Length: 547
Image 1 (cartoon, helix red, strand yellow):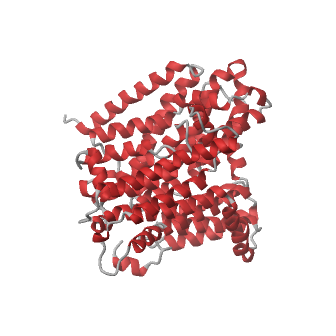
Image 2 (cartoon, helix red, strand yellow; image 1 turned 120 degrees about the vertical axis):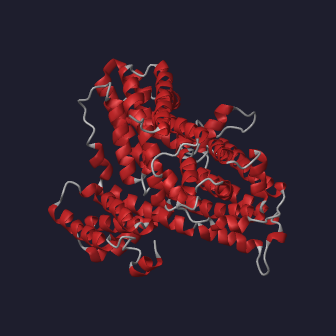
Image 3 (tube, one colour; image 1 turned 30 degrees about the vertical axis):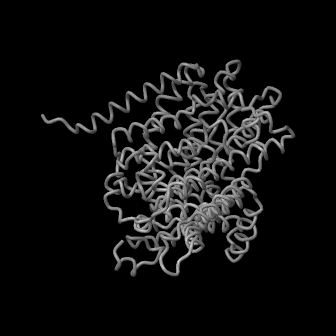
């Protein structure tokens, strides 16, 4: 945006100047929707938020505006009651959730922790040692590999990998939008299929809820069904295949290369140049943080489950992730890691009057804006829940469906729900209790063979929304951790996500549905998608042939 345009238009005007009129139209249309009791009312706040975000290019303001319109609908148009309703009903209750409060504290602590490592310089030396060079392909491969290793939580994955690799990516010539795509692809995707993660307890609970809704709770084996669904989580696997191939071939799809060329220099790189920190100053705090996370979850989980921690067994570790107070462990781990990074911080890199405490505080403040955006996203989700958005979208599932096409429809509906609401967990919570009973109803004796495919379709649709929705917390945290405007991140990542979604909806789920989830189908689908991907990339690189 040019300086003259910035002065002419405030945040609500956008770069083109039509953001303000759009918001006025949306505000007026909200009262029309309320007065006419329009059927679209349950998802109207999502529509408003999405339009407002794209019109103003301001995620925080767009989310807040969507929440305001949702409250107007809930208050029957009595807009003077909206401020109190937003605070009392949709803001403060978020902080009674241990998960949400823990996410905020952990995010801020981790921001200070990573900033200490960045300014100290040891982190860059550690990564350089691990990657044996800083070519674009090696840095991108390192970011992807680190994302796969941080499988225990999607949001923490995005924050850690993005902030850690951002300086090195800039120095090696990797654009921030491309780094954001790599980070985002290896966050929710990995957490969704990891057999031990902060997602697993919720996923198993939703599977169990689906069996309960079907009246067949005694038949439920959630963990076994989760394992069986992993090969059929086609969007996740296709996304990772596409990521691997694009890194290997250095392939840019859609606007990725153009937006990357337009990026301004990253100020974060300037901060860390000339740092003199030793390798151990970064290695010890990082190892301590990761070690405390896994050991802490194991000990706390086994204690909560009433079993002794020793002797160690893999089954105990899996159960521990379900029973442990994960947010508390993450806070303790990040706090201890930050204290170690503070203690080991090389004072030689500080300018006059600066201090390690100031560096830590600056790192926390850098993530204050993302935290506010997260809170606005929770407020919007709260209004959507009160309006019954989930039930409205869930009604799109009928009970007279062909079993062969049902998994594909579940995936497409899940993608729509997740994109509209910006929540993968909310999508699972909506669709799983609906999809499992419907599978029993339409598939009859073959329901158990089809069930892993349907469960995989729910998970795939949920992750697609996490990757693409501009109001998703994962999208927001990833973009800001990598120093990218959230809309630029959505714009550049969407073509890749659509390619993976197209493969899932045209190859993976149709083949699995027609074969009743035969185990070999997943391997055939992955091979077919890979071959098609290679063919598409080869054709695009060659360009149009001359006559």
